[in-house]
Length: 67
Image (cartoon, rainbow, N blue to C red; front, side):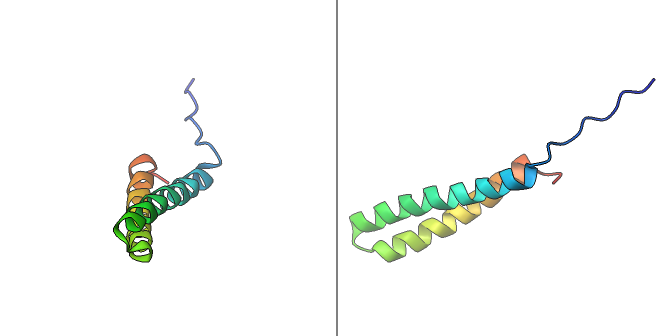
């Protein structure tokens, strides 16, 4: 008798999306705070969002390679 293959949880796509959104929010706030300290608030926010997108994409790729 063969053992059935383990099923993947059904909400993996939602988890991956929330990882990206969470990373965007967190890095956006970091960029906003750093930009406010340096006097370039909008630039800090934009740079934080770009870093957040890259970090979130890398995090999703490393966790869900088979998605």
